[in-house]
Length: 178
Image 1 (cartoon, rainbow, N blue to C red):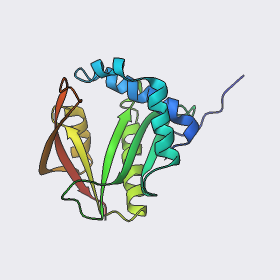
Image 2 (image 1 turned 135 degrees about the vertical axis):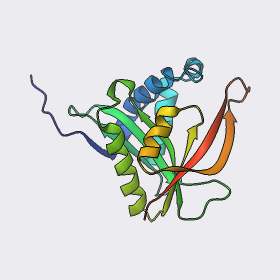
Image 3 (image 1 turned 45 degrees about the vertical axis):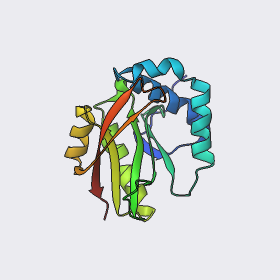
Image 4 (image 1 turned 120 degrees about the vertical axis):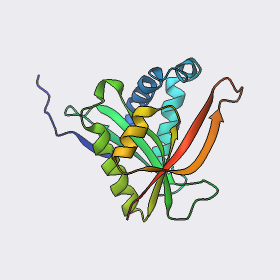
């Protein structure tokens, strides 16, 4: 049996794809030294249910989950976007809350396709600016964003788990969408 190949693409996620999103998310986390320890605490089924909820019942219509697909229609990346809830956000500010590409799919163009789809989706939803909280030590993401026209806007934060075992410094980047 042969499988039909399709062009690599990006589209809105479907609820049945939640486990595929989790697989990408877990593979990405496993490659992040400070976050890999969190994997033991994360149940794949619970994570999948959270993604099903985000896809089916987002808090607002402008919350979106996008998936990047390879030629065999396998999920190789995803993004979650929506209105920014930063205290200094304008009503036309959006946030890229999640962006993951499976480590095995990096450098194959999925990053750029997903970035373009994010910008197109946010523009269509009426947003004028997008923000992204990047881990301060994540040079590859910062390089991707810099090459795509994003720049730091001066905001920073520190996030962590409930027990303060993991603390992550983040820098906010932004880009104009109009």
